[in-house]
Length: 72
Image 1 (tube, helix red, strand yellow):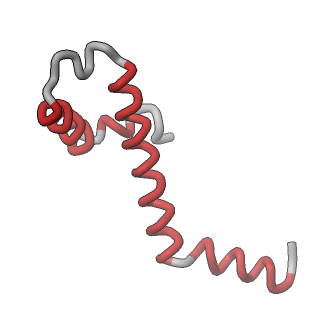
Image 2 (tube, helix red, strand yellow):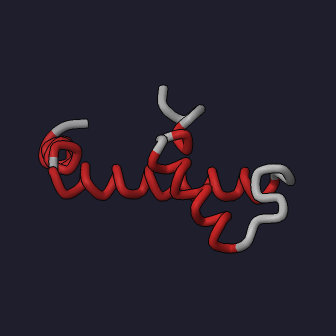
């Protein structure tokens, strides 16, 4: 790759706005995956009220356990 296309891609890769959006998208994906795993795990949310389930999800996010298996 060369010329203006390479410069444009480099500028996008270094853009603080693009980096921020990428980070937000990554966190959204991790949280969505964590919730899907909890829904699929009968023990994780067993007999929880909506509030209790939400509190467990928030606790996992605060403890950063929603990132387990995703950080390399």
